[in-house]
Amino acid sequence: MRGCRPGYEPRCGDGRLNPGEACDDGNVDSKDGCTANCQQVEADYACPDPGKPCVSTVACGDRKISGGEKCDDGNAKSDDGCSKSCEVEDGWACPIVGIRCEAAKCGDGIVAGSETCDDHNADPKDGCSDTCQLEDGYACSAAGDPCTKTTCGDGKTEGSERCDDGNDDLGDGCTPLCQLEPNCDQGACSSPCGDGIKFTNEGATTATRRTATGARSNARRSPATPARC
Image 1 (cartoon, rainbow, N blue to C red):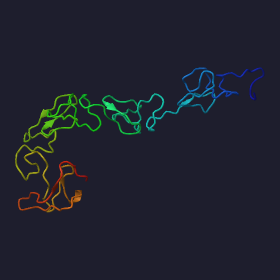
Image 2 (image 1 turned 180 degrees about the vertical axis):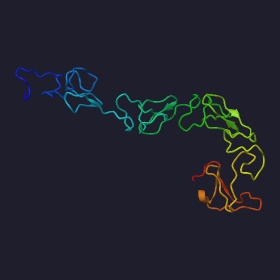
Image 3 (image 1 turned 45 degrees about the horizontal axis):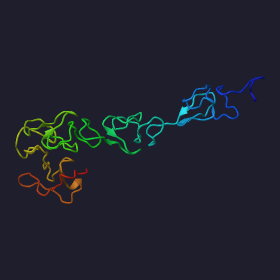
Image 4 (image 1 turned 90 degrees about the horizontal axis):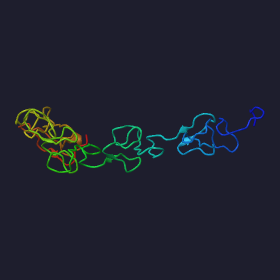
């Protein structure tokens, strides 16, 4: 071979790409990208430069399962079911490659996916429903722990309460059911996004004007579908 000293015998592991070799990373070890006999580039590797270590082609976050990856949801972030090293995180399931992971099971004590609570069981009417959604009148402060009942009017905003001003008065911004009231101080009423009341600027087709009592007159209420603001 050109560049070799007289009497030199080309061999696998010499760091040169000799005739018949597919790669040569300077050693005769397998599982590093180039097989021990230099006849094959191993899966999930590329060996572009003879004499140098092969490089992994596995990229967590590319929406492909390769190498030792157990999942790939299209990003390299943790705490969303598939970790930054593409391992499935506790309490999650990632059945479809490239798609957001989901909760593995309601009742496992881990809040995951679309769950808003998980009290370590799948029983309804205890604060956390059988689909792991927070029930009205309860607070579920820590995953895996039992939920506790809330008391509207105790001055503490908890669970599904949007407010709690410590009283049962109307017209002070917080209803006796601990939900936010529309603000009608400027004539046309407005309300916080997510309170279940659609106003003109939230996509409702009917405007709301302040009545003599200051309460809403014809707001459109839609508790099942939160307003998109």
